[in-house]
Amino acid sequence: MTELIKYTAAETATAIAKGEVTAVEVAQAHLDRIDAVDKKVNAFLHVDHEGALAAARAVDAKRASGAELGPLAGVPLALKDVFTTKGMPTTCGSKILEGWVPPYDATLTKRLKDADVVILGKTNMDEFAMGSSTENSAYGPTGNPWDLGRIPGGSGGGSAAALAAFEAPLAIGTDTGGSIRQPGAVTGTVGVKPTYGSVSRYGLVAFSSSLDQGGPCARTVLDTALLHEAIAGHDPLDSTSIDAPVPDVVAAARMRDVRGMRIGVVKEFAGEGYQAGVMQRFEESVELLRELGAEVVEVSCPSFTLAMPAYYLIAPSEASSNLARFDAMRYGLRVGDDGTRSAEQVTALTREAGFGAEVKRRIILGTYALSSGYYDAYYGSAQKVRTLISRDFDAAFAGVDVLVSPTTPTTAFPLGERTDDPLAMYLADLCTIPSNLAGNAAMSLPCGLAPEDNLPVGLQIIAPAMADDRLYRVGGAVEAALNDKWGHALLEEAPAL
Image (cartoon, rainbow, N blue to C red; front, side, top):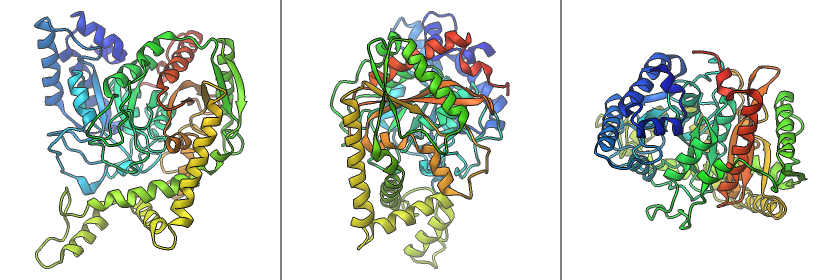
């Protein structure tokens, strides 16, 4: 039974469809794994044993009836706790939503259920997706399965850790400044930020509405593509949803051929602050792309150096507006409501008790940036920088099919190392933020271990908006070549838990 947790999602779905194993057996194997290791990893905030087994039984009944099963039917999945789930708690990693059970499913949740995916539970995250290490969760940090004393990335560290710990073969994350790709890079897994607007945000608890994007996470490029296909597509309930066909990402993942493609190396993603072992693995990946038949050229995007300050004005500004809804009247926690205090006093006491330090820091920063007399100087200027970054991408993509860079400047750092230095923490997203500001698509996949600490390094691939299939074409080719070179997938080198 234990080997079932090592199957890829594609292998699991095939085995279920052929009747070689039941969906209930698969779900139970993963629930057993969670019970065995999650006290050490803390990837899950809520495990839905009964719901998962009921969903699995429904898949088995469907198969027994002779009905055709979808490409991911019966495959278990870990869902980031920022999507609403009817009848299952949603906390966003915050005390202010503790105990809140949504009355409806997010569109993404509904599409997973419609695809007969088995949702195991909700995963740990930085509070309201604000963080780069999953140390800002109100329910304790998540450990990196490669080294439990190190961060699993953030804010989707729980989803990435669940994959690397073999607690689930599929997971969902959200990417506001890199929260799918950065956890993927430091845990040796694959994460994709789809084009902004191509996966519905209806039912995604908003942090920064113009940047947030849900997306797929898995242990292989093909599994990520299968999940991408299941969740993407137009949604009339989301006003930012793109009404256009989704590229055939599954066919692209299976192509595994980059011959004839032009690939740009971003000149600005290098230099001081980049770990030597990270750059070594990245440069080897670039050479590999040449060997596979791609033409590699250097590309300069000068405005990318301004992306970090622009992001940390835009995202907190939107967060300060979005989080105003948590006022002790409508959701979860309420403090001081003993009949002696005004509504304003109860709201203030609830926010003081319910929000963590990083959330308060960003609300204050965002409120200041939006305040009268400062709006043009801060928020307005940041939006102008955002336009410059989009123009840099447009100019680059006029000459290349995709861009590549390291996903993160360093490998996973020790828990607690940067908690007292927010600026050092923010640098973990240095390479990922420009794509969020421009709204295009990006992927991180493993490209080896850094020699100095033997921890995973991620290769980032960036594609134009609505050209997500290019990510999978390049990612599939790199993954296949590296697995051939190593003789196995990188995760097989992870220590046993």
